[in-house]
Length: 255
Image 1 (tube, helix red, strand yellow):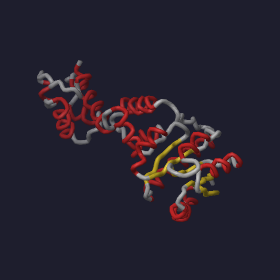
Image 2: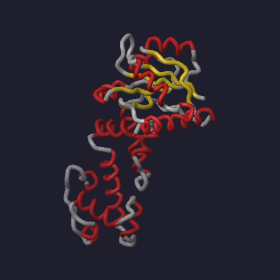
Image 3: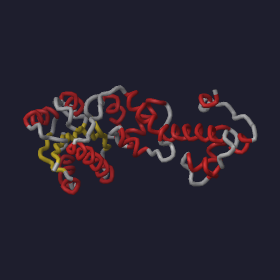
Image 4: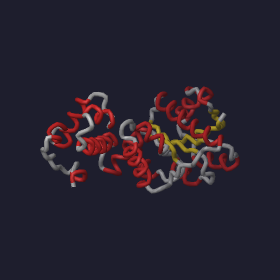
């Protein structure tokens, strides 16, 4: 069993997390709980075998963010949980160790998905295949990783897969990516697919349904609709020689 400690200054929430989630079913054991970060830090320093710290952000004595910054063991996985209004504050402050973020009130599906991902990471670490993700890297680093993933796997790329790649929750990645790039994950994926489709359309030997499949569309009609929305003309009109409408969004692919 992987060892978890939980930190929250509200005893009712603390007890609920401990007793209402089936930890053992996911391969985890809650070994201790605390009402502030200082007590948790003292316990961690005395028990280096702790694998995961699940902590609230806003607490007296020592906040969850301060706790994460003071951890000496970089292998410890940290999960923040807090109210929705703390989300942007937490996103800007996450600079050490933090792997995931859960919003109160925490839903079972969100917690189970979070700990399934973490168990896989810890299992890989146990096998010797684990490469630690640098949670304190520059924000641009995760953006580069996600963009490269989309560019290399645009046919099947998903938000969930990208989030797993950078050790973020899908909800957190969705918010952070849009904040840091000015475009949503789904819109960036659309941009890459449209650019790839345009390149392939230049080769008249490639059938349109083959292009649609290659860029992730089971139904070619959906590619036609998105292509026209993005470029202002249909794929058929583009192949006939009509020039796309230049917009701020597609200007880079037409220059």
